[in-house]
Image 1: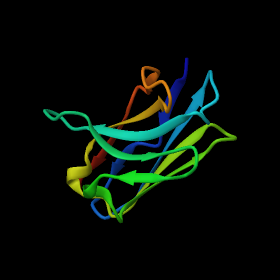
Image 2: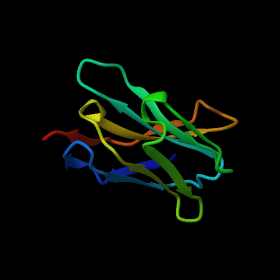
Image 3: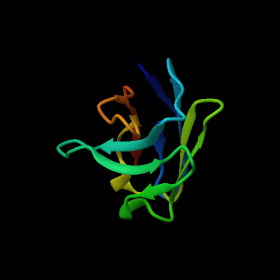
Image 4: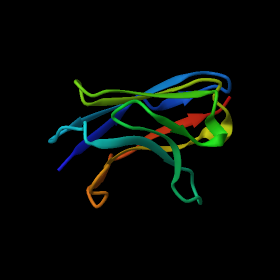
Length: 118
């Protein structure tokens, strides 16, 4: 069992930056792919970025060049640095942990709201 707790959301103006953090507890996360997903009202949850325990990253086209995902296996944390934010980035952002060998072990945080508006 992995418990994920997100923090760092809020209101920011277009062009601004936010840093989301996710703290994992309950199990070592070194065997998990970690990621961030988001869901805007009326839309399905979508991938933002993922990172393997070895540091390989994957980004949605919409955020490439603006967002950076990172992780610290020793601290069991994963972060998302979001720069040049746009109104269309407004969504609830969810932290995810998925076991790389047993994907049935798939955990979600409670979500944190990010609002980009002037």
